[in-house]
Amino acid sequence: MQNTNILRRTAIAAGLLLGAAVAVPAIAADNYPSKAITMVVGYPAGGSTDLVGRLVADGLAKHLGQPVVVENLGGAGGAIGAQKVAKAPADGYTIMVGANNELAIARLINKAVKYNIGDFTPIGLVGSQPMVLVASHKAGVKNAAEFVSLVSKNPDKFSYGSSGVGTALHLAGELVKEQGKLQMTHVPYKGVAPLTTDLVGNNIEFGVFVLSSGLPHIKAGKVVALGTTEAKRSAITPDIPALSELPQFKNVDINSWFALMAPKGLPAPIAAKLKKALEETMASPEFRKKMEETGSVVADPKVDAGKYINTEIAKYAKIVQFAHIEN
Image (tube, rainbow, N blue to C red; front, side, top):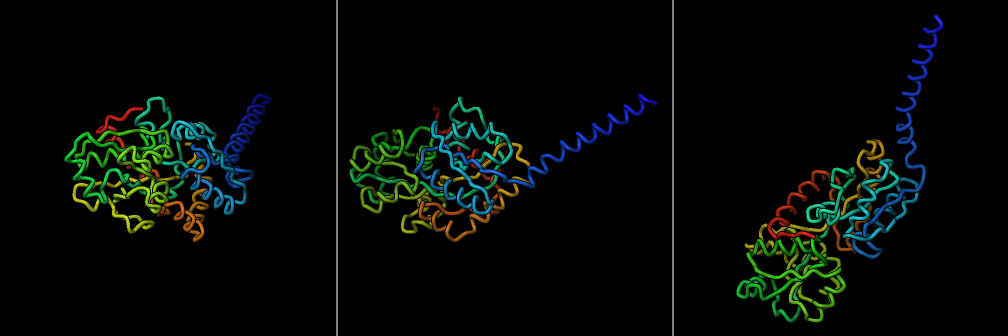
């Protein structure tokens, strides 16, 4: 009888412990967030991803009622920051605003990158902007048609620059080469600043910028815009043609996008709170205006971020294979 009572008490205690274990995540989700959230941005302050990240952080803080502190963790094209988030506890207190470089491209070109998209919980797409193909004045071309004619007649004579091997800018340049059947040399720079210096100084003929980086130099007349890289003209720059308006570039559709991500295994109630706060942020006219000032268009909140990113990875894989890109 005594043994039976002991067994009964043990079973009851075990049941209480199990119930408590189940209840803890639910309570944590109900109280989320109860402290400051860290938002990792895998780039130094001042770049396009950082600007978008800070706008999102401000919006989330407003709608969640807790501070969202941006941590700039630059290096390896955003991969160091992404790695930190991939390994962080899935409790909603470490999140990131990342770009396609580290979320979709890095693993395709760099074997040292150990994480993959499956190591994250996508919360939502934030926005995107096209790249823009530009010419230095030395090149002597004024539009995409003249660019194609010049390069086609002079295979391997001309070069284009990007901000580095395996960046979205590099992939955009290789897509233009592939679609236009053009032979050009890629010159990887260590960032946009030295690329800009060489383009403005007429030391290289062509280059690819993210629209927000290139636009000030285009407006100042220091470089010539040949075309943007999305399927349609950007709403930010309706006066700059899309490259896809030329028949040979009809399949050129590539951009730089930003997404809010959390570690894999994030509890659904916490993911839902973050998604709701993001959508409320993106619906704000002030947020949309500030995003446009950075050259970005706010994403459609109905887009499934996970499916979108996987489609983008498949697109990039084809370009990487064509161009034999490896970092």
